[in-house]
Image (tube, one colour):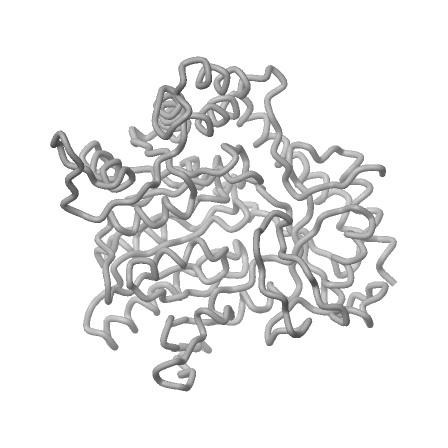
Length: 439
């Protein structure tokens, strides 16, 4: 092909609007956090999400999760229900606040938080701790909408605030409503590979003016109105820079084009891959309620599919971190962990990589991550079998309610290139490469 095909490469507007807003920032010397671009980007986002919401532009989606939980009243000793099948940024902010993640497994159709298992977890936590969880964090996995109405119905019945992690679901809708506007707070991300980018950045959607002002305070070190710095609460340096917001303002001019392109690429995969035995494209339920942005297109590779070179899978230790510019890593001592994609999935990833195609496993469930399996104090991992085949797993750092769905999907799932720089010919080449490597 002559070029590398990336999962979701940042794509600037053809009109160069990003450069225009950035140049304005330099021309006016607004090169620090806050400024006209930040204000303008927030207004653009408010118009996009609708529902009369207010938006705070922040330095990252992780910061948005953190401030959403903080604003929801989460504190030390609390428990927060978090979707287990997700990126770590959904769960780590819970620990920032001294709370414990209660990790809830997935349903098989959307791969998102199972609402019925959510209620099992709430009831069991109340029975075991004497108090309800302090918040619920559902996640729009790869852009797929969660069952927002059912989750909100359960949350409202128990009086638990919902912080929607729509970081991957910017522009996705459930029953016609934009994700991030159902709960008390909504989280967006504009990282380099998201639907739109601000280089690095995120936003928190709030429900009213007073909450918006309080979150603004927390995002800017919580400073009081004196001629010197006085702080009555612990705040954070989380506001977005005026330069990054300029990129965001330009990106908002092409957001609908990006959404349309991702859906187009998904349709191509759906049309080209069904004739490959053992390969399935993950698609939204066909009932008219879901409108996924298809941030990434996902396939599953059946365990009986034979892939070229799978006998050599995991024989070489990977020397870099997933994601390219992921920063400093520890060198692995073994190519294996106790929960990993099947050998044929790893072999396909390697084959695609050799063909200059970036592909990745799906997220490893949080309840299988070592950081949430620590047993420093008690020394053992507690496993309790609840009715209906649910397993309650308790460590010193988390509690998990497991039905086996996310672990199964992690072993067979693979992310394929989907972004606005992926052409129709690229998709055909990717599909052809997949077919070539199946025995």
